[in-house]
Every structure is written in C-alpha cells, then in structure tokens.
Length: 270
Image (cartoon, rainbow, N blue to C red; front, side, top):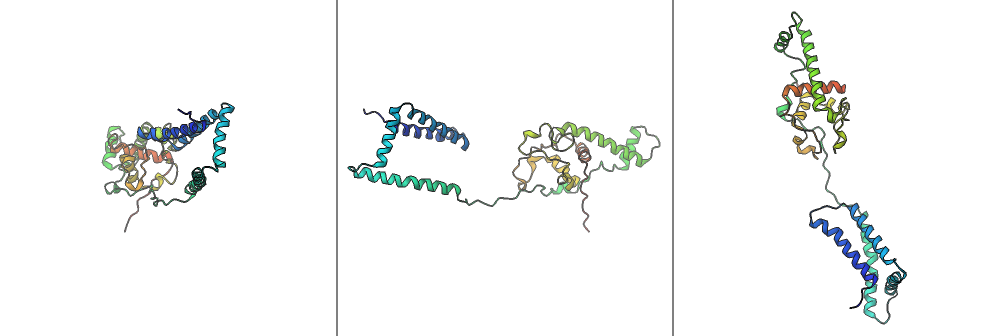
C-alpha cells in the first residue's frame, strides 16, 4: 500500500475538519455562530500548517506536488487538461464568492414597529378614580381618620396625598427593580434585559399617553402587546392578577410624580 503524501494528507484533514465544523453541530440541532466557525477553520489551517512545516522533508514534499501541478506534465495530456480546468475554476470561484458577498440582496420590506399601539376599547374610557376622589369616599376617609370638622376639599387633598404615598411604596416594591428609584429606567435589573426598561423621565414616554393607556400597559404587560408592536422584546410583566385596580392606579400616580411629568389630557371631541 502506497503511503499518502503530505499534500493529500493535509487536504483530507482539511476536508474532514470542515465537515465536522459544519455538519456535526447541525446533526445535534445546534447553531454554531459564523464567528466561531471561522475561528475553528483558522485553527484547523494553523494546525495543518504546523504539520507541514514540522520538518524540511514534509515541507519539500508538499511544495513539490504544488510545483508539479503548476508546471504540468507535457507527457500527460489528460493531466494537463484537468490542471487547466482547475486553475480556471479557482479564480472564478473566488470572484463569485466576493461578488456574492458584496452584491446587494433582495430583502422583504421591513415593517415599522409602533411604539404606542392603539389602546383597546375596554381601556379607552377609563378614568383614574384616585386623582379626584368622590365625595362619599372623602367623607368615609374623614370618619376613619377622625378628622372632625375638616373641610371636604382639604380632606380630599389629604386623601390624594395618602394615595400618592401608597403608590410610591408600591412602585418601589414592584417597579423600582427595572425602572429605577427615580423612574429613569436604571434599576438594578435593567442591564439584564435585551430591551432596556423605559425611562419615564423622557418626555417622549408616559408624558405622551393618557392615564388609561398607562393602566392598560401595567395591567397587560409586554406579552399582551398587539402584532403591530413586534418584536415582543419587552420584559414588562402582566400585573392584572397581582395588583388590584386601585393599586395599579396608585402606582401610575406615583410614577408620573416621580418622573416629574404629567399625563396627557384626553381630547374632547365635539
């Protein structure tokens, strides 16, 4: 049995290595990043290069076969035809690869993501009942706190402050980890999300929506965003089952106050 030359041994090793790099991960359902593939191919080439240059005999044998191929063998016409075909194909393949890499690709139009999708009808007409507590609720508050002959409007203001304080506490417990103590989106967990939590102090966020819209987003969270707001990268949880409606309204009052912005006033259609 004739011994395999250094050249063909190197070619076989390279082909086997390429097959392993591309075929093995796919057979196990694994996705190997292109950068990792290129790194493994580079290591494969370096390893083969070290094998070829291990001693002068191997290097001379490797170079000899390449030199003979480039010079050709006048006595073997078939060999020369194959050589010419290969030498013609190599630059064509290189040229096609470069063209394919640089040529613009036909891509489907990219859909525009809507940051503030249309609010569902069942939330559209909601009003925060804690902004201006009704008289009956204020009177009940006066009785519970034994405020005596305090005026109704003064008591209403104190009740609003109570809601604000409770909302701040709820915000710090439930919202601060992501949105931060100052509602600027820099909470201790903010860096761990693909889509960073919203900065409420930005005038382009909650200041542009009415309170009913904020209530909808708190209640339904990121998973309930409509298709027009894909991709669903938001980590906002669904709070409707964990917080009562009053608690959600209190949090909304507190987050607007903490961010130093006011909710948008609903337009009245005439």
